[in-house]
Amino acid sequence: MKQHMKQGWRLAIRHFYIVILLFLYQLLWGFFLYRFIDMTILPLLRRFPLQHPSDSAVSLFLSEAQFQLTKTDLINPYLWLLGGLFAARMLLTPLFNAGLLYSLHHTGETGGTQFLQGIRKAWKPVTLLYWLRTLLILAPGWFLLPRAFKLLMEGHSLSELLQSTLPGFGGWLLWSFLVHLLLLAMQFGAASGTGSLRSLGYALRNLLPYAGLSVLMWLLAVTASLSVSGLSYVWAGMLALIMHQAYHLLRTLLKVWTLAAQYDCLQSKQS
Image (tube, rainbow, N blue to C red):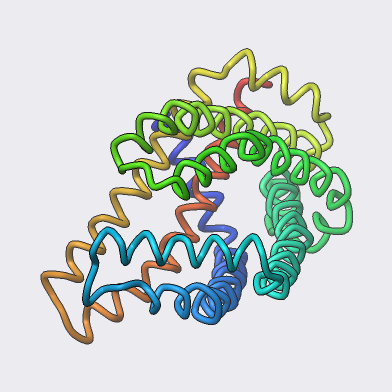
């Protein structure tokens, strides 16, 4: 794993300008998502009875929210807006993935990166696989989310809600983890030209080291996030603000590093 992490780091550094590009993309996406939440969710939360949070007041708030969501068309414009943002992300993100994954495979051929060429050559299969991955990950929510929403509207306590939904959501999390890894391997194969099914076979035969490396890289990212958050509390002020903003660039670098390490792990199994 250490060797894959080292090689992944070398590849990530060689693609640092792509890291900057992805950072700006994530920054814009986060801005629009923040504006959406600020425009839709916060006005509803302001009606929550903070000054007199009795059971009857909370029940009235939930009843009013349920009526507004199910009996009126108040939410329709927001759903269209959220759908538009989701569609834009579903179209743009696989293009960036195609360019990056293709460039990771072909970097050694010319000594440089081939991000734009990767978008032109690999965007179709990578986009289809990205859409399939998203569909498979979201599919369990079709059954789990309505049940959780129903329990919430029925006023169940937090412990009852967790007991009823936690096993299902835990299985959903495990399912999402496996789907992400396997479909990512297929995207590697599509972008590199080795074939999606062939790359999937390598991933299945080497699932344990592949998954272990992925978990290790994700734990590294979580550790970095917690460290920055902790330092922000200790060093409050301008320094904390600079560190918080700089972390978004670090997080993007960690994502590219993770992808590069995962690619090197699978590539080494094929050689």
